[in-house]
Length: 252
Figure 1 (cartoon, helix red, strand yellow):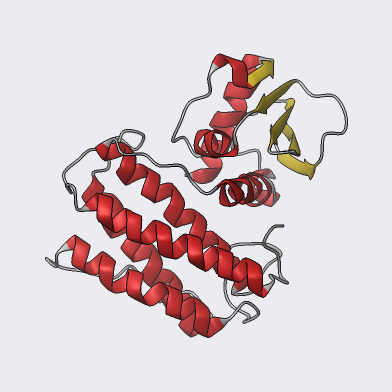
Figure 2 (tube, rainbow, N blue to C red):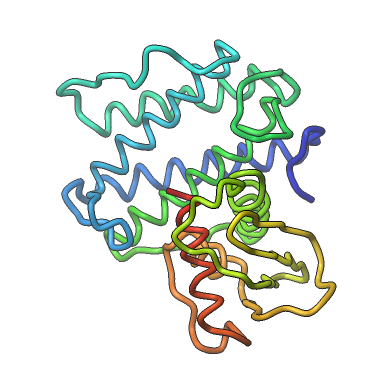
């Protein structure tokens, strides 16, 4: 079951539970040391991730309050302690989502979902990925919830890679191939060329390569937070690598 414009109360509660648990774990691990380097984001320290996630929370709090992008932006935190800033906005993000509910019309970057439900899923997934960042920095990694990881694979493929983002052909990786991602009994088939990335649910048709395995490992690989081993891909290895590079462009 995945988030859409009619997110059920049960699904909304699931996202909030994930957000609550992962944001608390994030704070716990970040306190192990702010100067630590983030392995898969070499320009970032844990302190950078802390301030980034605090800013993300504040941005969404303001969007839900205004039903529009905040302006002026970004905020200035001055010389405040980064963990204090993070804790302040972590304490506000869940009440802001709960106050909005799941059917409030608001700004999102989705072409199809302009409701507050969008931010329930997005904030749960944003927090999970950055929790991994600080855990990797301190070598204390714990897995993402399996159901959330599957949901995250769907989001990163259908929303962030798929869509009208490539119509101008503005890519350094104009891969011409069809890739399939399969995990936990689900598949996504991605048809790529220089000006499009078309993502469909299911495993119909032939492909140039397939990536498969545990949802947590696949999700982290898609986000550049992990590597595939040689047993997790079949077919054209070059096409798989170009697919991942194309996705990295979308996530930048």
